[in-house]
Amino acid sequence: MNLLRSIFSATAVCGLLTIPCIAQTQPDNTAQNKDHAVTAENQSAATSDRAITHNVRKAIMADKSLSSYAHNVKVITVNGAVTLKGPVHSEEEKQKIQADAASVVSPDAVTNQLTVKQ
Image 1 (cartoon, one colour):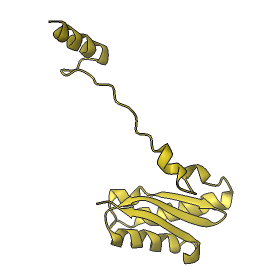
Image 2 (cartoon, rainbow, N blue to C red):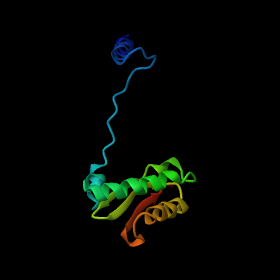
Image 3 (cartoon, rainbow, N blue to C red):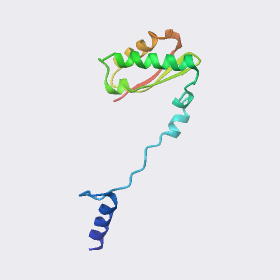
Image 4 (cartoon, helix red, strand yellow):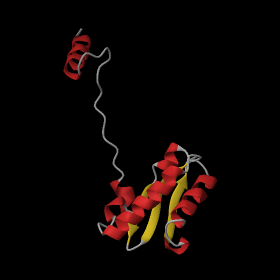
């Protein structure tokens, strides 16, 4: 009876749900990001770097053959150097995104840290 009362009170607190709410911990990849030299926090505020990031993102989004994973990769530009991060579905997508970035800046200015999601 006490268990049933607890479930109903948890349901009432969480709203008009038919199942009790369970508190979830937000994902935290801070420790993983410390292993990487370049993170999204490193994105430069310089107008030229923001323009490069915008143009690389635009080139990636224009490629409709890419998956939603690929369309959501991180593009980080610092001093004209572009770093690509995030999961993609295949090695082919990884190469296509690198080529999209290289169409905006020199291929030598692109660091591809994309990972193929298994």
